[in-house]
Length: 252
Image 1 (cartoon, one colour):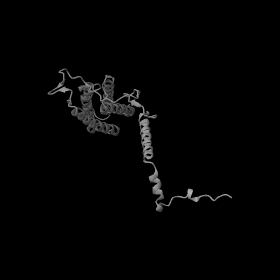
Image 2 (spheres, rainbow, N blue to C red):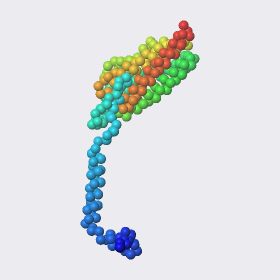
Image 3 (cartoon, rainbow, N blue to C red):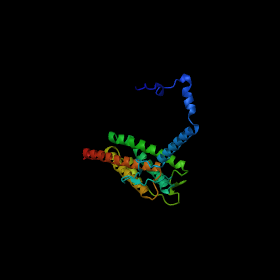
């Protein structure tokens, strides 16, 4: 006849009896230490493995291109380096300050020389943006201990090397500025728009010359500013072409 199962084999020890505590105390401490040690080793091995494995989906390193040029994907082991100071960067900023100053001078004539609303709105936009950019360029030069002007102190017609100052690309001649000051109405509008388009195209040449110079335009502030100037002035040239076509059609 089968014997009834011994229920004591499957029943949980009564904590109040102290049997559970005695069971834990009976566990050899050497075995417990070995188990803990193996767990630590396993965790450390996992951490080291994760640290040594390359990230499978790491983002590529992309170097932006100059205006109109494609970007480049650089090797994964590329390390960042601070760009070296470029004399071309300094000359670009100094020259662009002079260039912008003439554009602001041209827009200052609009209020007293024309009632054309499109020309007035465009002039206000150019005056505001280029005045702010002049402040930015001045700060950039001052922070780097560079002179604001390309001209020799006290000799505005000579550069820092003592050579005659060269006009920036696209800048209006004294004769063109004189004709603009004397014009009124539709004639002023025509001279202003054609002169400012000439002026903007000169700025695009300056940006291109900067990026064509080895080692120039790598400073992050310079790169962003020159790229933005290129995009903005191309857009404004298209606006001026449309305004001029309307004026010529209206007065033709």
